[in-house]
Amino acid sequence: MAKLGIYIVEDESLYANQLEMMVDELGYELMGITDNSDAAKKELEEMQPDLILMDVKVNGSMSGIDLAASLSFNANVIFITSFEDEATFNRAKETKPHAYITKPFDSKNLQRTIELVVGNLDQGSEWQEDKIFEKSLFIKNRQHLEKIDIEDIIYLEVEDRYSTVYTSFGKKYVLRMSLGDVQQKLPEQYFMRIHRKYTVNLKAIKSINVQDNMISIGETEIPISRTHKEELLQKLEWLQ
Image (cartoon, rainbow, N blue to C red; front, top):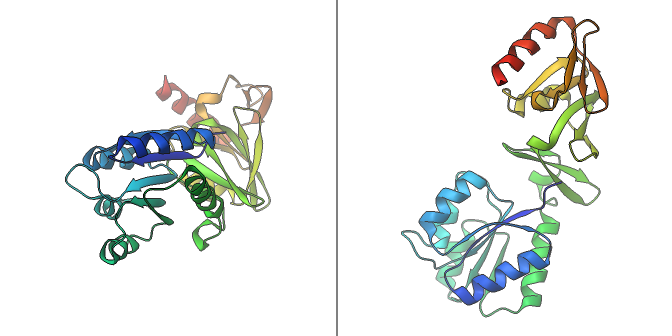
């Protein structure tokens, strides 16, 4: 299972190093770090990290506040600043950040802020249900959201109104969505519904029994419906 990904935008090396060490100590994945808003803009749009630690004043053509406001995805931001004036705070507040830290800060304060934000990502209305994004999905497990990379899914099986997600690292998860809803959000070039109960990752298929209409994924055999067999063979040929 993938770690929670954090990206840092900070132009003071002392604080950048402190933030980087804290992300590592907390066991999260550092997806990137830069002191420049223009470089950050390009990488953030591509990576879409789970959390951004953003200095208000950074190098580049945009401030941290303007950068946060310009992002095309729903970014979770913690602003970090040495400014305490009301105008800066109000501008930052307009982007609806998850927290606001004033420099200088100590490691304990930073750690608690990050942990509180990460722990509360699933408390807002938009995080009450399982979520599927372009490259990952978040599955609600008790009070936590567990992140799974789409590429780690080998197949899904429908069970009533839920779907069970099977992964390449041997764990399975119950996804509170119908297989039809899930299918619409998975990349169609790699995932295909081959049976009323199963959708598979085409790259995970090890063998096909065309006589018995079965495929093998690891140690598991999954049936192929007759109506989907020809389409499956065509897609597999296209992947080669």
